[in-house]
Image 1: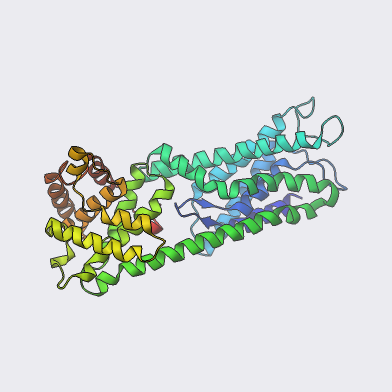
Image 2: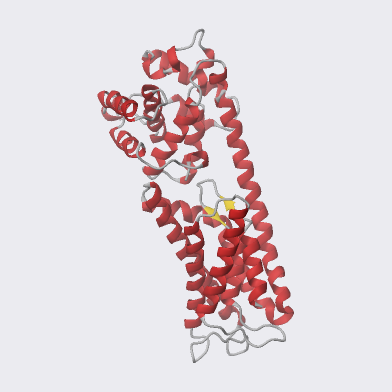
Length: 394
């Protein structure tokens, strides 16, 4: 019985999903581990009544084996994710064994008239939810600590992205437990089938979103290929913008539009008769900057699906004094792009100490006049952060 669940967990570890924020989840593995933690009666077998330590040992060993297989396949592991998932399952198992389902307090429930099935289901769902919440908290804290991000916004992002899989994860374990008294170990594949289908759907969503982003990134290179901007400028500005935004606690749904707007922020340069030296719009006249931003926004609006991205692009050249003195509504995302673009223009894309210091000094000359001081503070923090992962996200 333990071997069957161990195999399911190991296989599930090979089916990880990286969410847009960079959060890594393994829904099939997690659902299998939860099912083991909540398992009770089994058709034709004695009651599954083992200590929490045995459950923890089997789950931890299975997760480690699954992680080692990923290493052999040259795939990312993330040991803190493995540890957090183990702790979450232990919380679920301990919760159930402490639940007053029997006078002894041990996990040995039976579905009968004295204890309706819906009561048992609620207890199991509550235990699974507690374990998942602990796992999300732990992974959120570690990610925030590793990448210098606000804990509150990181946890909020973790919880938002977890919604797509949470209901499936909560239901999979109890479903296996309720099927087990009737069909035995066949309950494991039957109970996990809905979770596998959910995994396929979420995987397709993340793949489509990444494909869409790659399309935007390819379009952003138009100015580079045409010789208007330096190679990699748009990608660097987008990456820096996302890093700044995350450190300032922007919501996950706003990060996508920000990244797209940052990638396309120089698109309007394709309408210029002659390129700006080094493609540095920060050195262009204010009227020229506005004209480039407006032209880029006009091109993007023709897609009819990136209206907010176009708005962010159009407002990226607005000086911060318009916000401070006139109360003009300029989106924070636009102010972030303005600072990130200026930093890359002034540093010429270099990351050595001299170039970074020179760029920050130039930006400080316009502090409060051209650039939002809070965004500049976030920029200063970002230049010492670890490198981010795909999409500018860890």
